[in-house]
Length: 448
Ligand SMILES: [Mn+2]
Image 1 (tube, helix red, strand yellow):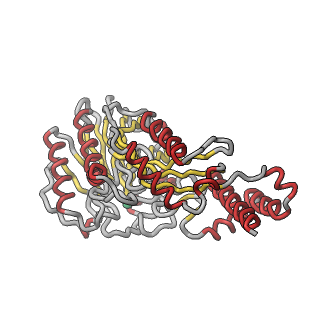
Image 2 (tube, rainbow, N blue to C red):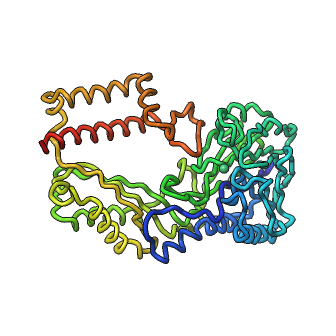
Image 3 (spheres, rainbow, N blue to C red):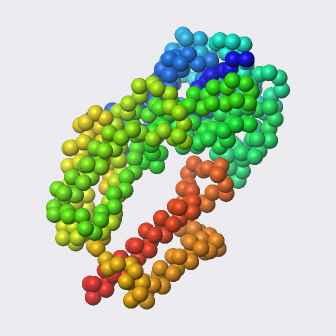
């Protein structure tokens, strides 16, 4: 039996302003403002080019609960482009565009099926070539918070059709706002071969098969927290069990957070040298190929980003800190930012430096020597090492850090509004804290 082929997308957030700090050029303003729209055009282009059997949109099409006229008009026109090519579109609404807040400003074309918020619905869609058929089950959010476990009512029958379930969920059993659920719960629903999820903005494959469970992520990142190339999924299913997922890049703007660690011995004689060093890294970034999320095979659609927006973090220790930077950090940052943007923001693709965090310090005595000679540093070092070894201390450290951080309960424990702290992340934070405290101690002593 020949299979079906569809596009899975979610979290379009049409009209969402991309959040960058500081003054920006006209060109960048336009690029940032229009990027969520351009990304959706790329999805529709790909659907037409690849002549897919249908398109799934898994919630959060609009950024505001009250959908905008402009966003609505744009989206309806894109849906009409798909209608002309006879490509059906299936839509569920999410927490950002729930059904009860939704005004349909324009008439949706007949190729579009919007799932009800009242109960789970099922629709059929056939392959354009061959006999394969898919059954699509889904339900929309009624309000911005949705505590109903709607997936428990997804019960497609078993036959030779491919069953696909659409769900907008944080996949967090403890949440009562974004459809409480877990990967285990989804796997427990019978006869579903592909879970097309939405809500989490990072492209994530929770399970590759039996059943496949996947988040395509948003087609355009909105701030530096949503880094890297963004896109949607091309899914091919030859038979109910067999799934192949490819990545279609769509984000005109790519966000980066880059850390540059200066070496003690790097000969930096002036701020020009420092600027040249950062610019070199920026040029390398423009020239190097973008990483495809999850190492998925990518669909060749001739994609080129319009530009990159970068937040730099300059760390490490170097004599330039005391000679030229210390005491005038803000001024140095402003000048570096300006000069870098003058150098790289006019290129194609552009590279815009949206911020520079200076975390430089003066060269310090070798840590090994300090640990032998300095009781205070030695104690501090022990505290850090003990936290890394002891689960209880780890939890204590984490709760002291505040509610914005959480420890994932498992690989599929993803949350939208807080930051996961993995072992690696905690180590990096502790190392940073250790460096910062040690530096403070040494500085205070120097100034006495
Ligand atoms: Mn959402």
